[in-house]
Image 1 (cartoon, each protein chain N blue to C red):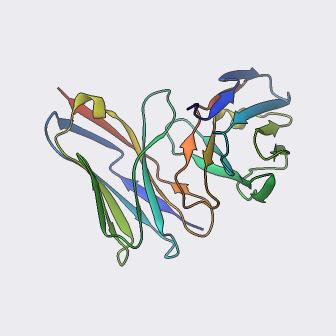
Image 2: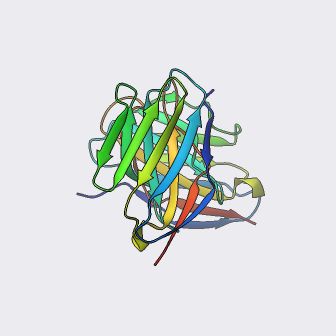
Length: 110
Length: 115
């Protein structure tokens, strides 16, 4: 089945800096890659997703890139703000269910 | 509109008890998913419904876990003879289209603690 690995597990940045979180996947049939933000005790919320027919997608301060050949995708957050502090999960979906990474705890220092 | 809701939000069970967790998806959503999220981990897939049909239950960890969605809307996840390792947050998600490659909207989860 699919295996999604995510790193780093923790990331601390200064407010205004950029943050990058990387994921790799194993199943070449995977073609849908969402990113979720989860605040402590809250539900995961979709922040951006990308499909395999697209190499990059951007939504304001958030962008995702996908390299199908290398089987990796990344989340980029620019101009980070304290409210970006949360756990971020990548996921890969193909033939079966979504497989989630283990999460990155992002701390934005004011 | 109303999002996905789950009840109860918290459940404490004694080992060996049966529990039932409810999910109310967004109205009209055809796909419904159950996930288990252990502390500090990402959600892990349990099972998937398309309307009332359970299309994939390969993630259910044992035959003590059972899910149903008899009328294609509300779903119940039942755990029989709970064990301590069942302690986790159980998340439900729904999607307005068929298949797993569509946006999934999550509920707030039910936090289950088995003593």
